[in-house]
Length: 206
Image (cartoon, rainbow, N blue to C red; front, side, top):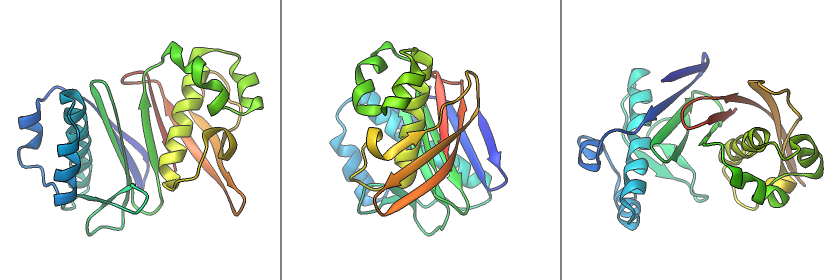
């Protein structure tokens, strides 16, 4: 499934049906990527890791560009080789997602809706967000997914979900949310799009 977020931003969400050899066939991997893959021992996680790269390659090629692989910056955020476009990747059991934005940093996250989100509330949500979520598993999942997308967009360390990433209260079923990255020397308001699809939720921050 392809989602055209706006004229400069497009995302793809795919269920993973191929095995590792099929995913690797013809997929350009840099030496650091080969080394990173070698460190992943769980077979399902290896497949998800590869499926994300297959997804971003498909997006790039659909834009008429050549995919030459990924590198990571000093914070571990992936970026395209020989391209100024911005990307983000996400995966969960059986699903892979990727997004590109031609001019702005972007973040993507996919999540199933799980009861265990209730256990992480104190370290993830502010007091106002906890009050709004009201222990509802769907609202908690939206907050988590949206904040993951914000975290991936910002792409630097020393961020905590509770203190530095904020999401304004939203109506149930809303697709457009407002998020913030708030640091002592930096504040940024961002748009978040949230879709009920795939494994449960897909959030995009840009």
